[in-house]
Length: 436
Image 1: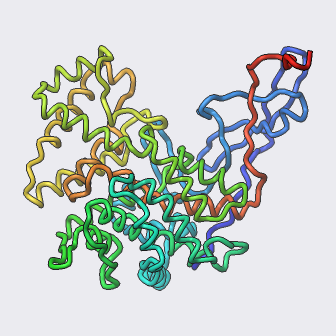
Image 2 (image 1 turned 90 degrees about the vertical axis):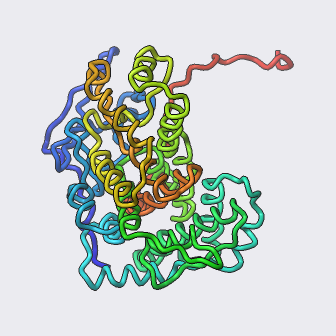
Image 3 (image 1 turned 180 degrees about the horizontal axis):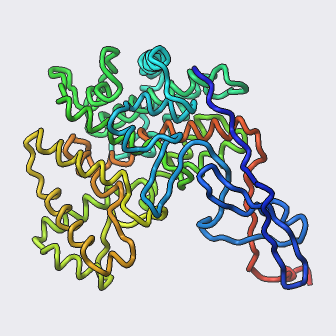
């Protein structure tokens, strides 16, 4: 594996901010400047020097780290992996190549990519001992619960994934996680529908192999159209990383305790499970189905949204105050996929009508509510045949390289354990009744 560029120390450029507190204390704080001219005030010395802390609910204005991995400009709708625009990667790259780029910092050479793909193929099988673990879950068990548990269970059979004291074992550990997560996901799906598990086929590509394990049955092998494989690869690329979101921050925080890679990414799965994070594309599909089934005109639905009687799912983003660049790519991909497969999906027509209505309505324009990645991703997964309860699992498969990259970056920095502070607002000291 080629070595990534060393993690750079933030540039302070001798700039400082001056903070004056109500009690008269004054403090100079360094101003950190990122490579894209982002500015941040370094408050590391604040509590030790003044006894004060900052409070920032939901961390909307707090930078927990500096990172070389992903850059987002939400106002301009920019997303780049290691400096490469997401539009270029979506058009020209593959999921395996993007995974390598995120983890090791540079695009692989032809030989390096070939070796990485070989590692993915060599590690696609699960230990047979894990079959009994799958049997322990009820058929109606949520796939995300199974995914999280089985990632940790799988690591028990691979000590190299649990003891990463240097860089030597990292390529193999990363490949094992990225490869096995799709096998675990497919096995979980087969378990839930009462079908026999299908073993991976080493002759297939990453995405084709996953589809084979999902949809092949003993007497009929599933043969996906090339457009389906490409759409799935595109989905995974666009979900591979997204800076310091809830699940990625969770992975970094858990990893700061020196928890192993598997335990850390399993925590990311649990964070992603939440409906406000990874479950958003499911909510979009449910909304579109509701509109379709009730026959409600889109214009009426939009008016109810404006009156706060209904919610418009898949619009707006915590970071993007412009069009989510991933949504633009997936919109075209959804059109192309359904056209190629000859599918006429009323939900796509409703989605387009909703988008048009929202983008031309002053209510949404003023609030900068543009379609996000979840708005079209569910339509693509639906067309591929992925059931709704597997949507968040698909998100987790795609996000695995990003989680690994962030865990690895933090691991190499060997920083302190993450430990946020709080402002206590509970009762003052009081005596226990028997102590009076």
